[in-house]
Image (cartoon, rainbow, N blue to C red; front, side):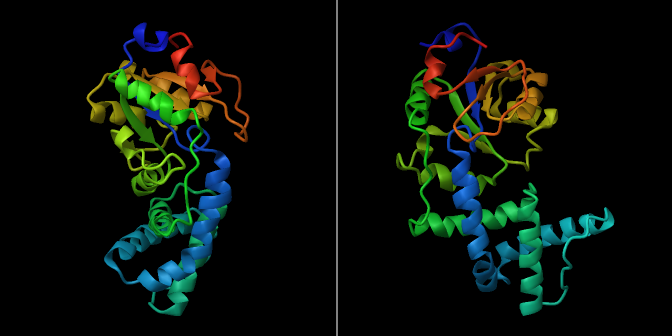
Length: 253
């Protein structure tokens, strides 16, 4: 077994998705444009469905807060019909342009991606070192969880539709921003509590130093994953890996 796991109390690995197990380009160049291209048709076909109504309610609440804070979002039309549909599409695009971690937006995106995965328009490209490393970790008795800003639905869909096939059997739990922001210390407290582990028993791997800083502050071990196309990160205290294959050769963080 890797010295990383024999010399430490690690019992679970918590994984980011974008820039960690799949290229950033898949999210920004494939998933986001796909959702944008299909948003109008999806809302038009599902505007009055209970699931979409719940998403729109979240968006209305967010829009009201944006108005209160003087952020000047595009107006929402209260009535139903084409004008209301168009106004929601405009607001959703406004949120997407700001890369807002919006619960209503993320939920809508997940539903659109579900259709895309189902018709094989979307296939998630995992880095080739990911599945072998996770399989070894599972064989070593470690739990595997995901923490991503994408909705849990979006996470499950991605993991079930990869270039390595459906690998959902390798993942024990999923966490999204309903647990809390990825840069907030309490989010990692909640994750540890849900897994039934002490934070010191969890290794978090991400491509964003601010997220790793929050996890460290909660007592977790961390690794900064550097992949092609990732945003440069400020110098920090986090050990760097360039491939998950290194999990089985690097010393304990």
